[in-house]
Image (cartoon, rainbow, N blue to C red):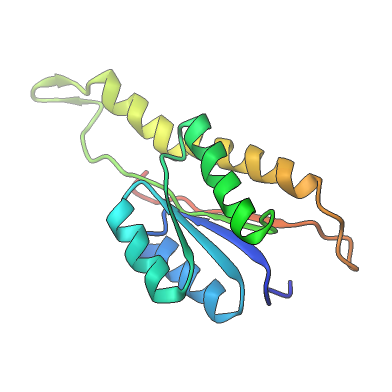
Length: 149
C-alpha cells in the first residue's frame, strides 16, 4: 500500500506499539491521526510526528465516532486503521481475597474486545464509502493484541 498522503488512524498511540506505529506511518508520508485516552501522551506523539492528536475512549461509541469524524475532517476518511489499544490483568480468577471482581473483567473486555470491534466497524464503514484505488483497495485495518490481555 502506498502510504504517501494516505489518511491513517492509530489508536493506543500515546505510547508503546501505537506510538511506534504512528512514527512509522508518518515517516512513510501518511497523514496520521493519533488517538488515545491519554490526552497528554497522544499530544506529545502528535507534536513529534506532525500528526493530529485526538484524545478518545475508543470503547465508547460516541467518543470513537467523534474521533473518527475529527480525523476525517482534517485528513479525509482513513484508508489505514491500526488499533493498538490493549490492557492486561495480573489478578487470578480466584485469589486469597476471593474471586476477581467482575468489574475488573468487564473493564478488560471493554478495552480489549469492545474497543477493537467498535473501531473496526466505524473505520470499515468509512472505508466502504471510499472510491477503490487502482488495485481495488479501499483500506486496511490492522488490530494488535497483548499477550498480557
